[in-house]
Image (cartoon, rainbow, N blue to C red; front, side):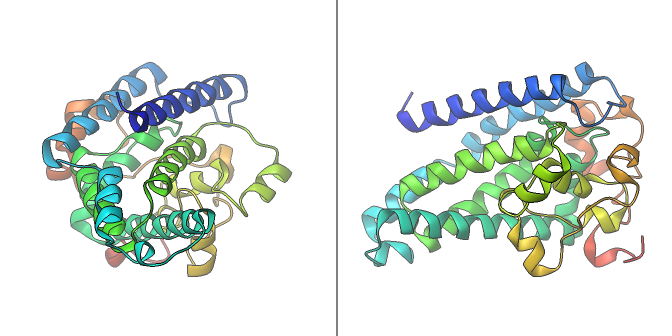
Length: 275
């Protein structure tokens, strides 16, 4: 196992265990469905995604960063910047691309078919932050590889970005309590659980808000920020209107969901702005 993989695995396990304990000790919301069943389905989906990536791509983002660096491909590889500045620019640029990608998966009906697997969870916790359809993961990796090729981030920047993105995805989906004052301050620098939970509301105009996974600035700058859900965090309903039966959200059904289930009124180009 190379050092990159060791860093990814160690950071993932450490953050996962920390968030899992936090959810037990200081939960934000009571769960509405069986955690044991949900985790079995979500972790099963999570386990499939690395396999799907390796079957499709011979290299990952870190490999592309190394190749681009060797061949001077990409914008940042053609400027002599201090390492710290290059890393900051690269991480911010990659995060903005992830934001745009997320909006695209909500805007285009064909992509929403894949992304609704993530939103169909009837509760939200740290496993929701990692639950994506394998085809969505493959498309996302293709976008990430193209971004690395164009931006030209250093391998260090790519490692840092992926560790931070993975960690913040678990953090901002976690069912954890943060005091209101702490949340209010934190959401100026990072997407908090209360901020992102709005995005998992059953109402389309809340689902299509707060797209950021890591940095919260893009939502504020581009008009997609919504501070709180209309029914409050304890009263809001998580999930999608067309998927309310937990028994029909098993792993096999989640895998075929994009081709067997209705889109609902959620894709941005089809929705009623008042919904």
